[in-house]
Length: 607
Image 1 (cartoon, rainbow, N blue to C red):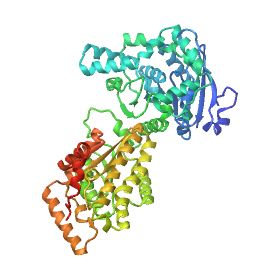
Image 2 (cartoon, rainbow, N blue to C red; image 1 turned 90 degrees about the vertical axis):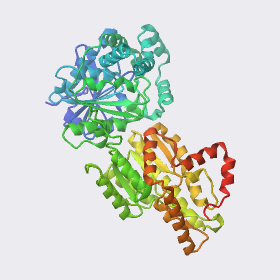
Image 3 (cartoon, rainbow, N blue to C red; image 1 turned 120 degrees about the horizontal axis):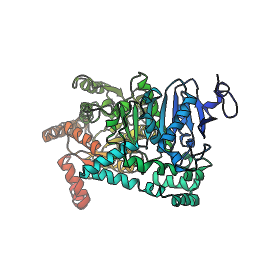
Image 4 (cartoon, rainbow, N blue to C red; image 1 turned 90 degrees about the horizontal axis):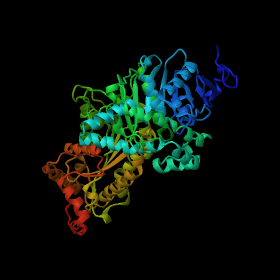
């Protein structure tokens, strides 16, 4: 028999328009009326969205369109919020009462099939109460938790840390108590109600979230009942926090759990979830570069994470990000289940970097102007270890911006968005500036500088949109801060890479994307043999190439050593990484004794 909305319209009649606009119905739990909103396809698997304080189902308006084309999406105003009943006494807001509301909702919207849950803040705390009940796995197929801990687990963690007062444990307790200090005020009775009654307006709340999290006001959706919600919802703090933290219960769950941990959360610190594996049979954890209100700022991340878990539980091949998020006792390599894209990967530093990351578990995508050499690198990667390493080779001219964009789109379609991008491709050039044709100068800038810019633009945009952070490595040089006569185009291009990397690092910090500039000195690679020289004959150029190839080879600083430093720069998030001893010397001289570097630049070391 078709269910009926508040307006009396059958579910079948509203199925088509419910994809874009929620259909409201009222579900009753005892004396409580719960405003429930359904979207998408009634025949699809059901995902229930639960909000926290001081929100309503409006919290999910950025997430719902990402799910509704495939799923039956249900959001509801919890008691005390929105169009649902507002009990007057705080005892009506215990987690047991709220869990009863949840069961009433899912019995109404999905009476026969278990539901998937995505919940935030106090909505997540409520869902924890449900999934830790005996037999919960019969009604809840999965639970993705955002910024809302299990209060019993939190209480147990705090008690354990205080009874084992190591510096690490005490720091974790101190951080969380400091972050939760506002909750003491919220439980103070009349004072917080007067405070929010006087100051709580949608405009102020949007400004508050913009200031502390950087979320644009256009992404923050609030109900017309915001003031009433912020006051009424305070009762949930008084009804639950003291009792659960003082007397935590042993609460285990067999429901598959996925934690979305917000690295910049002002209310719930990442360390709060350190012991969560003790209480769960199956646990995934994703740390993302967001603040507390991720449903507003990172809706794509939450929707994708939820769907990836649902698909994996249905037997599909787990997505790379989900594999990486799995919490297990088995040791993992540092870059296991990560995707690394490397330009100029056919030889030298690019090849050795591909091998270094592959040894650490990464999947490699590499490109080079010389496709044959890129395929050789790919074959070397495949030979590593037990044969599980993989690399994919492509031909690319990094100086061709449209080609770079096509390549980035192809990588995303076939392999996914990279976790790490390494802009390594480069060419060498030497010769007096006045002897260097403009087209040659431009060629060096196009490959060494524009190639880096094009790569950062094409792949950086993907990384920002994905919303889970990452790292970009740009190959600069000792020449970036140690000027040398007869190296104008090369030094200019590498100095541009260094400054560009610093600027980009500042710009992408909000997205959790690190940017490192790697600055090698004298390293023996193919770039030495292929360096062009202006102002000399072909015979003189060949002689110089052979001469400096011998000198660089005698230096005995090989590309694999640079690759190790690139890995280190990613692990430690270094902004600038000089590599060779002369690079370190030049780096610090340029900062503390720049006049010395200018005098040294007058020496003609390339003659």
